[in-house]
Each structure stands twice: as structure tokens, then as C-alpha cells.
Length: 167
Image (cartoon, rainbow, N blue to C red; front, top):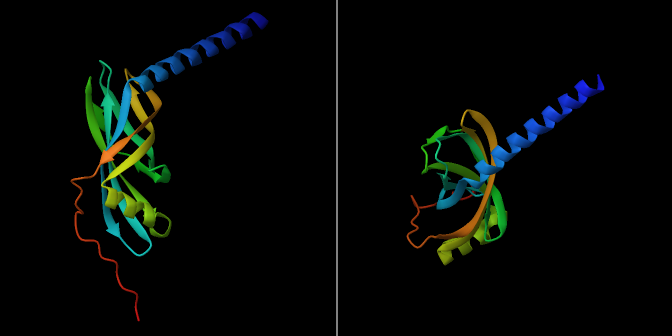
């Protein structure tokens, strides 16, 4: 009985190690980067920012993404997280994009947003958890990336107007 229990535990440990190795290899083969930032809807209390995130499949097998959670830091400040439940099939050695919306609190972000718009560049850190299908297995893949986004060609999609307060 002890021998059977020991064999069962060994099989469980082996299966766990093999699946974590596969997930680690997949994490090493998926890249994320922030490729666009757009400020959209503006209200007195909240601004909606739309982030375009590029996901790159560096494997020789197709990769199916079933969604993701992306935590976004701009100039060292955590601004929020965006989620996507879009299914994205990325062929082998290829890439795709996801668009996520993040709601920024104007009172706490006003200076950061102004600095970003004035400087026309932003340092970012992207910490993502993507839900993937790869070689018939589901995986949760954590990937991070830091970089600089150049906003020299930044133009608002429409003029932002803040409604005046009722008198």
C-alpha cells in the first residue's frame, strides 16, 4: 500500500514538473510590447486610455490566445489593468495585437497624463498574464516587458472637452 501511494505521489510530482517546464518554455517564447497609446473619452473624473499590445509567438507551433490581463505602468506609476477576452490565433513565428481599455482617475493621473502628452514619449512596463492554447494544452503564461513608447506622432482622436459644471 505504501509503495502504491509512493508511486502515485511520484507520478503527480513528475506531471507537475513536466507541465511547469512546458509553461516556462512557452513564457520564454511569448513576447509582449506596448505599441500604441490613445487617450479617448474624457470626463471630469475619468479618462479612458486605449492601449494596443503586440503579442509575438516565437515558437514553431500555432498559439491560440483566449484572453489576457495586462497591468500597465507609465513612467514608473501603476495606472491600471486592462483585460481582453478576445480570442486571437497567432500562427507560428508570427504576431498579433490586442486592444485593452484602462480607466484612469483624472485627479490622481492629471500630472502624469500632462507630462506624457508634453514629452511625447513614455517609459512603460507591461506585466501580462495571457491564457493560451499551445500544442493541445491550456497554459497561463506570465510575461513582462519594459520599453519606451515614442508619441511624436500622437494626435488625439477627437478634441477632448470637459463638460462645464452646472451653475
